[in-house]
Length: 360
Image 1 (cartoon, one colour):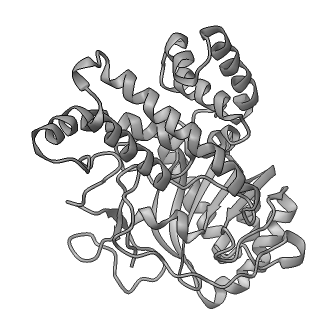
Image 2 (cartoon, rainbow, N blue to C red; image 1 turned 30 degrees about the vertical axis):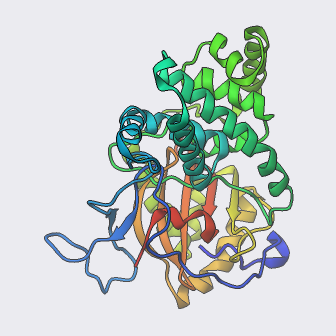
Protein backbone atom coordinates (compact mmCIF):
# COMPACT_ATOMS: atom_id res chain seq x y z
CA UNK A 1 0.00 0.00 0.00
CA UNK A 2 1.32 3.43 -0.78
CA UNK A 3 0.45 5.05 2.56
CA UNK A 4 1.99 8.20 1.13
CA UNK A 5 -0.98 10.04 -0.33
CA UNK A 6 -1.85 12.44 2.47
CA UNK A 7 1.49 14.19 2.86
CA UNK A 8 0.27 17.08 4.97
CA UNK A 9 -2.10 15.13 7.19
CA UNK A 10 0.04 12.07 7.84
CA UNK A 11 3.55 13.47 7.43
CA UNK A 12 4.52 11.40 4.42
CA UNK A 13 7.92 10.82 2.93
CA UNK A 14 8.29 11.46 -0.81
CA UNK A 15 11.49 9.53 -1.40
CA UNK A 16 11.96 7.82 -4.75
CA UNK A 17 10.65 4.30 -5.24
CA UNK A 18 13.17 1.51 -4.83
CA UNK A 19 13.10 -1.79 -6.69
CA UNK A 20 12.39 -5.21 -5.24
CA UNK A 21 15.39 -7.13 -4.03
CA UNK A 22 15.85 -10.15 -6.22
CA UNK A 23 17.08 -13.66 -5.78
CA UNK A 24 20.22 -14.28 -3.83
CA UNK A 25 19.08 -12.31 -0.81
CA UNK A 26 19.46 -13.71 2.68
CA UNK A 27 17.35 -16.64 3.80
CA UNK A 28 14.27 -15.99 5.88
CA UNK A 29 14.10 -16.74 9.57
CA UNK A 30 10.98 -18.77 8.88
CA UNK A 31 12.33 -20.33 5.72
CA UNK A 32 9.81 -18.42 3.65
CA UNK A 33 11.75 -17.62 0.52
CA UNK A 34 8.88 -16.81 -1.72
CA UNK A 35 7.93 -17.39 -5.31
CA UNK A 36 4.71 -16.89 -7.19
CA UNK A 37 3.17 -20.20 -8.17
CA UNK A 38 2.36 -20.39 -11.85
CA UNK A 39 0.78 -23.29 -13.68
CA UNK A 40 -0.31 -26.66 -12.39
CA UNK A 41 -3.63 -27.89 -11.13
CA UNK A 42 -5.62 -25.21 -9.39
CA UNK A 43 -3.02 -22.51 -10.12
CA UNK A 44 -4.02 -18.88 -10.32
CA UNK A 45 -4.13 -17.36 -13.78
CA UNK A 46 -0.72 -15.68 -14.25
CA UNK A 47 -2.45 -12.79 -16.02
CA UNK A 48 -4.56 -12.05 -12.94
CA UNK A 49 -2.90 -8.93 -11.51
CA UNK A 50 -4.88 -8.91 -8.28
CA UNK A 51 -4.42 -12.35 -6.76
CA UNK A 52 -1.47 -14.68 -7.14
CA UNK A 53 -0.62 -17.45 -4.72
CA UNK A 54 2.85 -17.56 -3.28
CA UNK A 55 4.52 -20.56 -1.70
CA UNK A 56 7.88 -21.21 -0.06
CA UNK A 57 10.32 -22.18 -2.79
CA UNK A 58 10.93 -25.90 -2.65
CA UNK A 59 14.44 -27.22 -2.40
CA UNK A 60 16.00 -23.90 -1.42
CA UNK A 61 18.38 -23.73 1.52
CA UNK A 62 17.15 -21.73 4.49
CA UNK A 63 20.47 -20.58 5.93
CA UNK A 64 19.28 -19.13 9.18
CA UNK A 65 17.14 -21.95 10.51
CA UNK A 66 18.02 -25.04 8.58
CA UNK A 67 21.16 -24.21 6.63
CA UNK A 68 24.47 -25.82 7.40
CA UNK A 69 27.04 -23.88 9.36
CA UNK A 70 29.66 -22.27 7.15
CA UNK A 71 33.36 -22.04 7.87
CA UNK A 72 35.95 -24.53 8.95
CA UNK A 73 37.05 -27.62 7.12
CA UNK A 74 38.10 -31.17 7.76
CA UNK A 75 36.98 -33.43 10.57
CA UNK A 76 36.99 -30.67 13.20
CA UNK A 77 34.72 -28.45 11.11
CA UNK A 78 32.37 -31.33 10.37
CA UNK A 79 32.17 -32.27 14.04
CA UNK A 80 31.50 -28.65 15.02
CA UNK A 81 28.73 -28.34 12.44
CA UNK A 82 27.18 -31.66 13.47
CA UNK A 83 26.78 -30.48 17.06
CA UNK A 84 25.88 -26.88 16.14
CA UNK A 85 23.28 -27.32 13.40
CA UNK A 86 20.58 -29.00 15.56
CA UNK A 87 20.74 -25.95 17.87
CA UNK A 88 20.63 -23.41 15.04
CA UNK A 89 16.83 -22.86 14.99
CA UNK A 90 16.67 -22.01 18.69
CA UNK A 91 19.78 -19.80 18.52
CA UNK A 92 18.37 -18.01 15.48
CA UNK A 93 15.11 -17.29 17.26
CA UNK A 94 16.95 -15.86 20.26
CA UNK A 95 19.02 -13.60 17.99
CA UNK A 96 16.02 -12.43 15.94
CA UNK A 97 13.96 -11.60 19.02
CA UNK A 98 16.89 -9.73 20.53
CA UNK A 99 17.69 -7.73 17.38
CA UNK A 100 14.48 -7.57 15.33
CA UNK A 101 16.56 -8.12 12.19
CA UNK A 102 16.80 -11.30 10.14
CA UNK A 103 20.09 -10.22 8.56
CA UNK A 104 21.72 -9.30 11.87
CA UNK A 105 20.44 -12.51 13.47
CA UNK A 106 22.03 -14.53 10.68
CA UNK A 107 25.36 -12.76 11.25
CA UNK A 108 25.22 -13.41 14.99
CA UNK A 109 24.46 -17.10 14.53
CA UNK A 110 27.34 -17.44 12.08
CA UNK A 111 29.70 -15.63 14.47
CA UNK A 112 28.58 -18.02 17.21
CA UNK A 113 29.46 -20.98 14.99
CA UNK A 114 32.94 -19.61 14.32
CA UNK A 115 33.49 -19.29 18.06
CA UNK A 116 32.16 -22.82 18.54
CA UNK A 117 34.61 -24.02 15.90
CA UNK A 118 37.52 -22.45 17.80
CA UNK A 119 36.40 -23.77 21.20
CA UNK A 120 37.71 -26.89 22.92
CA UNK A 121 34.32 -28.56 22.67
CA UNK A 122 35.34 -31.55 24.79
CA UNK A 123 35.38 -29.19 27.76
CA UNK A 124 31.79 -27.98 27.18
CA UNK A 125 29.32 -30.05 29.19
CA UNK A 126 26.19 -28.23 27.97
CA UNK A 127 26.65 -27.02 24.37
CA UNK A 128 23.20 -25.41 24.16
CA UNK A 129 23.69 -23.33 27.31
CA UNK A 130 27.18 -22.33 26.15
CA UNK A 131 25.97 -21.25 22.70
CA UNK A 132 22.93 -19.49 24.14
CA UNK A 133 25.30 -17.37 26.23
CA UNK A 134 27.51 -16.65 23.21
CA UNK A 135 24.55 -15.59 21.04
CA UNK A 136 23.00 -13.42 23.75
CA UNK A 137 26.27 -11.62 24.45
CA UNK A 138 26.87 -11.03 20.74
CA UNK A 139 23.36 -9.58 20.51
CA UNK A 140 23.99 -7.29 23.48
CA UNK A 141 27.06 -5.95 21.67
CA UNK A 142 25.01 -5.43 18.50
CA UNK A 143 22.26 -3.58 20.34
CA UNK A 144 24.69 -0.87 21.44
CA UNK A 145 25.30 0.23 17.85
CA UNK A 146 21.74 -0.56 16.72
CA UNK A 147 20.26 1.96 19.15
CA UNK A 148 22.47 4.71 17.75
CA UNK A 149 21.44 3.85 14.18
CA UNK A 150 17.75 3.84 15.04
CA UNK A 151 17.95 7.34 16.51
CA UNK A 152 18.57 8.63 12.97
CA UNK A 153 16.16 6.22 11.24
CA UNK A 154 13.70 7.87 8.83
CA UNK A 155 10.14 7.34 10.07
CA UNK A 156 8.89 4.54 12.34
CA UNK A 157 11.21 1.58 12.81
CA UNK A 158 9.60 -1.86 12.54
CA UNK A 159 11.27 -5.27 12.94
CA UNK A 160 12.00 -7.20 9.77
CA UNK A 161 8.88 -9.27 9.05
CA UNK A 162 8.93 -13.04 9.21
CA UNK A 163 6.40 -14.63 6.86
CA UNK A 164 5.61 -17.94 8.48
CA UNK A 165 5.38 -21.27 6.71
CA UNK A 166 2.11 -23.16 7.07
CA UNK A 167 3.31 -25.34 9.95
CA UNK A 168 4.98 -22.57 11.93
CA UNK A 169 3.53 -20.51 14.75
CA UNK A 170 5.34 -17.35 15.86
CA UNK A 171 4.87 -16.73 19.57
CA UNK A 172 6.44 -13.25 19.65
CA UNK A 173 4.23 -10.89 17.66
CA UNK A 174 5.11 -7.56 16.05
CA UNK A 175 3.55 -5.48 18.87
CA UNK A 176 5.62 -7.41 21.40
CA UNK A 177 8.80 -7.00 19.34
CA UNK A 178 8.15 -3.26 19.19
CA UNK A 179 7.59 -3.17 22.95
CA UNK A 180 10.90 -4.97 23.44
CA UNK A 181 12.59 -2.11 21.58
CA UNK A 182 11.69 0.20 24.46
CA UNK A 183 13.54 -1.96 26.99
CA UNK A 184 17.18 -1.71 27.92
CA UNK A 185 19.33 -4.45 26.32
CA UNK A 186 19.70 -6.26 29.66
CA UNK A 187 15.95 -6.12 30.35
CA UNK A 188 15.30 -7.47 26.89
CA UNK A 189 17.75 -10.33 27.32
CA UNK A 190 16.45 -11.28 30.78
CA UNK A 191 12.82 -11.23 29.64
CA UNK A 192 13.38 -13.23 26.45
CA UNK A 193 15.65 -15.84 28.00
CA UNK A 194 13.40 -16.48 30.99
CA UNK A 195 9.85 -15.75 29.85
CA UNK A 196 10.09 -16.86 26.22
CA UNK A 197 12.81 -19.52 26.23
CA UNK A 198 12.38 -20.85 29.77
CA UNK A 199 15.97 -20.34 30.94
CA UNK A 200 16.40 -20.31 34.73
CA UNK A 201 17.58 -17.12 36.43
CA UNK A 202 20.91 -18.63 37.47
CA UNK A 203 21.83 -19.06 33.81
CA UNK A 204 20.22 -15.76 32.81
CA UNK A 205 22.35 -13.96 35.38
CA UNK A 206 25.52 -15.69 34.23
CA UNK A 207 24.72 -14.85 30.61
CA UNK A 208 24.19 -11.12 31.15
CA UNK A 209 26.77 -10.67 33.90
CA UNK A 210 24.36 -10.16 36.81
CA UNK A 211 23.47 -12.21 39.86
CA UNK A 212 20.22 -14.23 39.72
CA UNK A 213 18.31 -11.75 41.89
CA UNK A 214 19.23 -8.85 39.61
CA UNK A 215 18.29 -10.92 36.54
CA UNK A 216 14.92 -11.67 38.11
CA UNK A 217 14.35 -7.96 38.76
CA UNK A 218 15.28 -7.06 35.17
CA UNK A 219 12.81 -9.61 33.81
CA UNK A 220 10.08 -8.40 36.16
CA UNK A 221 10.60 -4.79 35.09
CA UNK A 222 10.52 -5.82 31.43
CA UNK A 223 7.37 -7.85 31.98
CA UNK A 224 5.60 -4.79 33.35
CA UNK A 225 6.59 -2.70 30.32
CA UNK A 226 5.51 -5.24 27.68
CA UNK A 227 2.35 -6.57 29.33
CA UNK A 228 0.04 -4.38 27.21
CA UNK A 229 1.68 -5.62 24.00
CA UNK A 230 0.88 -9.28 24.65
CA UNK A 231 -2.20 -10.68 22.88
CA UNK A 232 -5.26 -10.51 25.12
CA UNK A 233 -7.56 -12.56 22.92
CA UNK A 234 -7.10 -15.84 21.08
CA UNK A 235 -7.97 -15.49 17.41
CA UNK A 236 -8.34 -18.57 15.20
CA UNK A 237 -5.95 -18.38 12.26
CA UNK A 238 -8.72 -18.87 9.71
CA UNK A 239 -10.75 -16.00 11.16
CA UNK A 240 -7.70 -13.74 11.18
CA UNK A 241 -6.93 -14.45 7.52
CA UNK A 242 -10.60 -13.86 6.66
CA UNK A 243 -10.40 -10.40 8.25
CA UNK A 244 -7.10 -9.75 6.45
CA UNK A 245 -8.70 -10.56 3.09
CA UNK A 246 -11.68 -8.32 3.88
CA UNK A 247 -9.32 -5.48 4.87
CA UNK A 248 -7.38 -5.80 1.62
CA UNK A 249 -10.58 -5.77 -0.45
CA UNK A 250 -12.11 -2.79 1.35
CA UNK A 251 -8.94 -0.69 1.50
CA UNK A 252 -8.11 -1.18 -2.19
CA UNK A 253 -11.62 -0.85 -3.60
CA UNK A 254 -12.43 2.37 -1.73
CA UNK A 255 -15.33 0.79 0.17
CA UNK A 256 -15.04 3.00 3.25
CA UNK A 257 -18.21 1.60 4.81
CA UNK A 258 -16.80 -1.91 4.80
CA UNK A 259 -13.43 -0.64 6.00
CA UNK A 260 -15.00 1.25 8.89
CA UNK A 261 -16.72 -1.95 9.97
CA UNK A 262 -13.36 -3.73 10.24
CA UNK A 263 -11.48 -1.10 12.27
CA UNK A 264 -11.48 -0.43 16.00
CA UNK A 265 -12.07 3.17 17.05
CA UNK A 266 -8.51 3.48 18.36
CA UNK A 267 -6.81 1.71 15.44
CA UNK A 268 -3.19 2.71 14.73
CA UNK A 269 -0.99 2.30 11.67
CA UNK A 270 2.81 2.16 11.44
CA UNK A 271 4.57 2.06 8.08
CA UNK A 272 8.32 1.57 7.65
CA UNK A 273 9.94 2.76 4.43
CA UNK A 274 13.31 3.58 5.97
CA UNK A 275 13.64 6.62 3.71
CA UNK A 276 13.92 4.29 0.71
CA UNK A 277 10.29 4.29 -0.49
CA UNK A 278 7.22 6.44 0.32
CA UNK A 279 5.89 5.67 3.80
CA UNK A 280 4.46 7.50 6.78
CA UNK A 281 6.94 9.54 8.79
CA UNK A 282 4.67 9.26 11.82
CA UNK A 283 2.15 6.67 12.99
CA UNK A 284 -1.52 7.34 12.28
CA UNK A 285 -3.97 6.95 15.16
CA UNK A 286 -7.76 6.79 15.20
CA UNK A 287 -10.40 5.51 12.83
CA UNK A 288 -11.28 8.88 11.27
CA UNK A 289 -7.71 9.61 10.15
CA UNK A 290 -7.47 6.03 8.88
CA UNK A 291 -10.61 6.47 6.78
CA UNK A 292 -9.29 9.78 5.39
CA UNK A 293 -6.01 8.13 4.45
CA UNK A 294 -7.64 5.25 2.60
CA UNK A 295 -10.11 7.56 0.87
CA UNK A 296 -7.11 9.43 -0.55
CA UNK A 297 -5.38 6.20 -1.53
CA UNK A 298 -8.43 4.99 -3.46
CA UNK A 299 -7.50 7.12 -6.49
CA UNK A 300 -4.08 5.46 -6.68
CA UNK A 301 -5.58 2.00 -6.64
CA UNK A 302 -8.12 3.02 -9.30
CA UNK A 303 -5.15 3.55 -11.65
CA UNK A 304 -3.02 0.59 -10.58
CA UNK A 305 -4.35 -2.09 -8.24
CA UNK A 306 -2.20 -3.82 -5.65
CA UNK A 307 -1.45 -7.46 -6.37
CA UNK A 308 -1.80 -10.00 -3.57
CA UNK A 309 1.11 -12.41 -3.53
CA UNK A 310 0.08 -14.33 -0.45
CA UNK A 311 -2.18 -14.26 2.58
CA UNK A 312 -0.57 -15.71 5.68
CA UNK A 313 0.77 -15.19 9.18
CA UNK A 314 3.44 -12.51 9.62
CA UNK A 315 5.17 -12.53 13.00
CA UNK A 316 2.17 -14.24 14.55
CA UNK A 317 -0.37 -11.82 13.02
CA UNK A 318 -2.67 -12.39 10.03
CA UNK A 319 -1.74 -10.36 6.98
CA UNK A 320 -0.60 -10.41 3.39
CA UNK A 321 2.33 -9.86 1.05
CA UNK A 322 1.61 -7.56 -1.89
CA UNK A 323 3.18 -5.86 -4.88
CA UNK A 324 2.04 -2.25 -4.65
CA UNK A 325 1.76 0.46 -7.34
CA UNK A 326 5.24 1.31 -8.53
CA UNK A 327 6.39 -2.28 -8.03
CA UNK A 328 7.04 -1.94 -4.30
CA UNK A 329 7.08 -5.16 -2.28
CA UNK A 330 5.15 -4.82 0.97
CA UNK A 331 4.01 -6.85 3.95
CA UNK A 332 0.97 -5.88 6.01
CA UNK A 333 0.28 -7.47 9.40
CA UNK A 334 -2.90 -6.87 11.41
CA UNK A 335 -3.35 -6.95 15.17
CA UNK A 336 -6.96 -7.94 15.86
CA UNK A 337 -8.93 -7.82 19.10
CA UNK A 338 -12.57 -8.85 19.48
CA UNK A 339 -12.95 -9.05 15.71
CA UNK A 340 -11.69 -5.51 15.02
CA UNK A 341 -8.33 -4.36 13.68
CA UNK A 342 -6.45 -2.40 16.34
CA UNK A 343 -3.00 -2.26 14.73
CA UNK A 344 -1.72 -2.19 11.14
CA UNK A 345 2.01 -2.83 10.57
CA UNK A 346 3.22 -2.07 7.05
CA UNK A 347 6.77 -2.92 5.95
CA UNK A 348 7.94 -1.29 2.70
CA UNK A 349 11.67 -0.84 3.30
CA UNK A 350 13.35 -3.00 0.63
CA UNK A 351 16.39 -3.50 2.87
CA UNK A 352 14.15 -5.36 5.33
CA UNK A 353 12.38 -7.50 2.74
CA UNK A 354 15.30 -8.97 0.81
CA UNK A 355 15.22 -12.14 2.92
CA UNK A 356 11.84 -13.01 1.38
CA UNK A 357 13.61 -13.84 -1.88
CA UNK A 358 12.46 -13.11 -5.42
CA UNK A 359 8.83 -12.21 -6.05
CA UNK A 360 7.61 -11.89 -9.63
